[in-house]
Length: 113
Length: 112
Image (cartoon, rainbow over all chains, first blue to last red; front, top):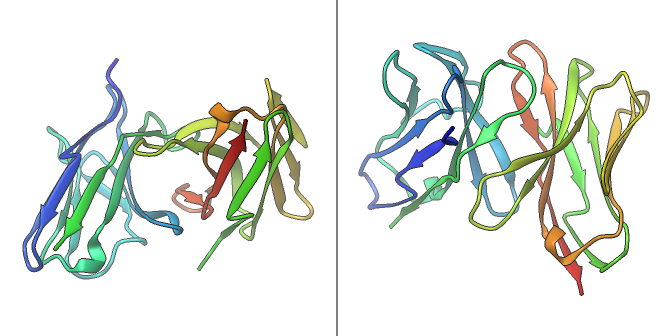
């Protein structure tokens, strides 16, 4: 059973471009979470999704950021018009239920030039 | 808004010593308290977890102590080894959407 798969692992964008980060949860997991990690700031919750539904987006910036988890295919975190402050590691996690252990991917590291 | 406060930010322990990391939470709706371990370049992985109906849980060299009245919990690593060198995150889960909120992390270095 493959773990949580994130791609790309590394992404470089120039200011103003768009970044798309993909996350395929573990087989049988219907709950997906996105976190952002900055040095010395820990893991910041961004959004929690179930298939086709956003359950909690309280950690998402109001502008430029969006997330989806379609019925088919991976979850996507989209950042439009990136700025240097968006440079961070973005982690996706999945779970079979909305309680208990989260299984994390290895992250996507975004660098904005 | 920091709902889970973690200390210390970094910790250096000699091999064989005890590593202790502390966390405090504010939201009484939290009902699940895991600790995650993260190595450089990797995603966090669950190490050990506790629910508030018990005051202590032990798995091998790792123990969680939980004080519900003080809203505090801590991780103890006995006989610390260089392979334990990693960043440790406490977390708390609960509330309306049951999301998992993390502390800011503790960078542990175990010196041989």
